Length: 247
Length: 128
Length: 112
Image (cartoon, rainbow over all chains, first blue to last red; front, side):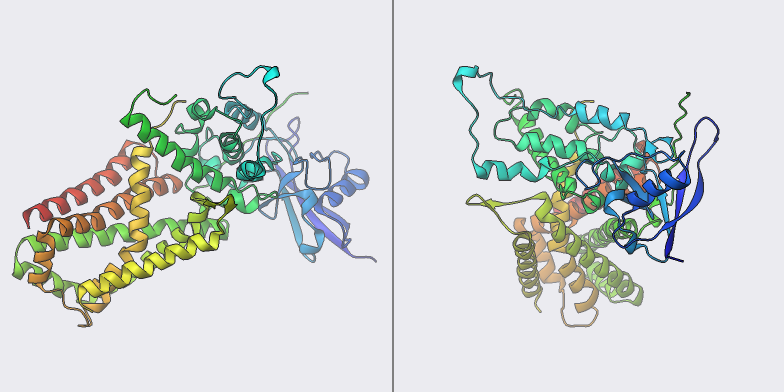
């Protein structure tokens, strides 16, 4: 009788369930397996009705985020061997509506992401004939870590302010705005400030820091937001002291 | 197929559910004791403005058992505020010198050094 | 969504946090440990002379006002975290208490 491990998975089928409920599954234990392998085993052999998102199985696509024993994790990045001998509780990411089983509704995030204008807004229009933008390694180093976000939403699940305030723009979107604000080719900080420096933007954050702790890519959105608080405050002071001079 | 998304409610006790949130709450609560101590200082300034007798009464109250107990609690929380504040400064204020990022530990260390200098200067001024 | 005026509240909060971190512990050490144990004596004449000097007034004011503001803003945000609401009542209580404390300190210092 080979070793097994038990998963307690939150199920929700909107056509039949009035609310979510837990269901237990016993799967083979393998040292090299991750929680995603266990879920795939469940779907392939035990219960084909289980729904969940996944893709790369190597922690780069950001699809498989879920709560594993109450901690936001990528299911492809949570090894069974770290939960050996216990029951693994698997739930959909906190702070998002549940669509079905482990699948969340991420529309609110998609809207928040696009609202920060996450694309280069040049300082002035340049014709193609003027050639490419030049950027030194040092200029790239300034914003490089903030480009690493895979939109996995673990930070939104970890952030208490996301849970308490539905309209909070949130860590990943604000970190991405910071990525563009720091880019030497960009001139869009003032334009982004309408959303970024609003009450629902950086000012909802109280520097809990949970976002950066759970980020699988070490983006450090908490740092991005605090730096933006400082630079936004300086911009605010400049605007107060010399109105209209800065655009 | 009909969609019926289910929204889980955030409980009022959310901050008790994980150690990192409890630690966050304790960190934030340090400001309560900093604030209460500022109130004590404000009372002290009033007594100072009221003359020698009032000031001496304030100093006596500082040394009373409730005064010492209260201030000891404030001291613990104030020190915890300093430790957590310094730890976060490299995130809020990353420094680049000559195109290279200054290590976080250096920024934190500089704050501890400043803390030591300020403390020593104030202690000397107080006549230790 | 529009640019917020939060910096008005946040900048003194940040400054107060730094002052609280660098200065408040040693002040508590003095008034809470060294004075009660007799190792330091804060004589009225010395304190009054210090508070009489403009620089002394400024330092004493900064030591009280900035950390007080820091505490007010932080407690307001924490009240929201604890489910005690984020509306006008909490804001009035927190910033009002800080304003009272700051005005009291200023009044006392001006009188010295």
